[in-house]
Length: 326
Image 1 (cartoon, one colour):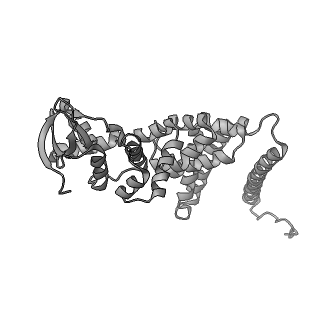
Image 2 (cartoon, one colour; image 1 turned 180 degrees about the horizontal axis):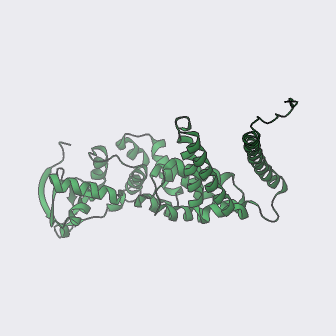
Image 3 (tube, helix red, strand yellow; image 1 turned 30 degrees about the vertical axis):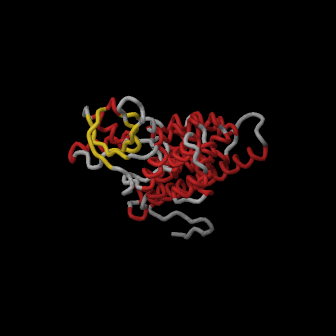
């Protein structure tokens, strides 16, 4: 870094050219956190700019767009900058190499590589060498950018999806059914779910019938509510609770599950459905009904036996036993 002519001063907003703002993305939460930090401690690290080369005295911002967003939100007129006297591609490469803020996201890396190759005529080999990566890594980043639909990238930029979820889960979903993926992302804009839950949604979607897929896409909340109930059941330490409380809790979960199942049964069983698929689905329901029926019969017998015992003062005759005389 000692070959760069360094200079620090304060600049006003009209002097800054923010042409590389889209290279990195920032969530509202990140802006709020940095706003509190800058309000309490001031700007600890100046933004990085280089001369624009135009007739007017202006500067191209290379790094520090989150800090700029915070300063503008705080209604501050000027910001401290460090000036690098180097070319744009060199500045972008060095900003990546000597990054002191949060790590670069893989989609941001892809944007940077595309910028260097497309607009600054850098070869993939040169970019890989300067970034300290392999040519295969560069190709993978560019492939990620080209294969991911714009609406998925937009969701990542807004913070609706993490780039891992977008590339590993949602990208495949989008290739299978873009419209259904768009419905899911629209839902996720106002509902927060972890990567594992979203991956579980896609796995269930992939194995579902056409009708069920449509139902899941039209109303993703049904699936996520059912998933939440399932997780609650797994986490409940039933051995530490009174049996009556466990009984009531499990019945409540069953009622909730029944409500969800009732709402989607029209999509699960439908005219012209594959008979083998229908048979499998109904058999699984029959097994459940049989278990419930057996449990109900067992409880009724126990209650009836207890009633008979209380009425006669004698224990009821058990099945297979002979009654004893007085």
